[in-house]
Length: 213
Image (cartoon, rainbow, N blue to C red; front, side, top):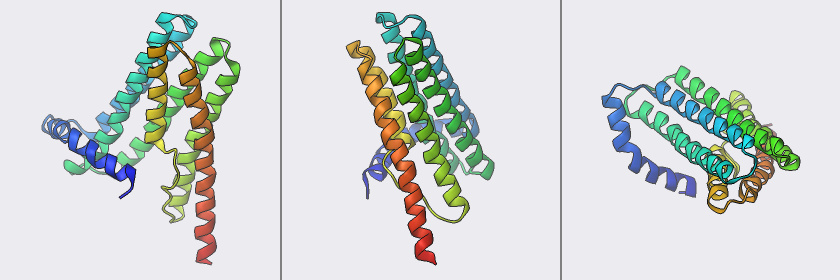
C-alpha cells in the first residue's frame, strides 16, 4: 500500500460520519462538488483582495484565510466521491461534473494567487504561479487523454491532492510568519513538479504503447 492509499483510508475513516449525514439529508454528490468550487472562488477572491492591501498584516491575514479555505474546499473532493459510492449515486455525469469543476477550481485559485503576486510587483513569482497553473492543468489533461485510449495514468508525484495541500500550507505559513516567501516557494515547487509529472505521464504512456506493439 502506497502513502496515498494509506492517507485515503485515514481520511475516509474521519469523514464517513459526515458522509452518512449528507446522505441522510439527501444532499447529492454534485451539490458537494459545486460547494467545493464555490469555496475555491471565495479563496481566489481573498487572494485578489489581499493584493489591494499590498504586503501588510491585513494582506497576510487574507492570504492565510485563502489558504485555509483552499484546504477546506479540498476536502469536498473526498466527500463527493465517497458520498457517491456510499449512497449509490455514482454516475457518468457526476464524474464529468467533478472533473470539470476541479479544473475550474485550480484555474480560479491559482489565477487569484498569480494576480496577487503580479499586483504587488512580484512579477517573477507571478510567472512561476502561471507555470504552476499550466502544469496543474496538463497533469489532468494527460491523464484524460491517456484514459481515452485505454491507458491507466495515475502515476507521478504532484497530483491534485498534493497541489491543494501545498498551496494551502504555503498560504497559511505566509500568514503565520508574515513572509510571502512561503507561498512563493509553494508555487515554484508546484510549477516544477506538476510539469515534471505531466511529462512523466507522457513518458509512461509512450512506454505502454511501445510495449503493446
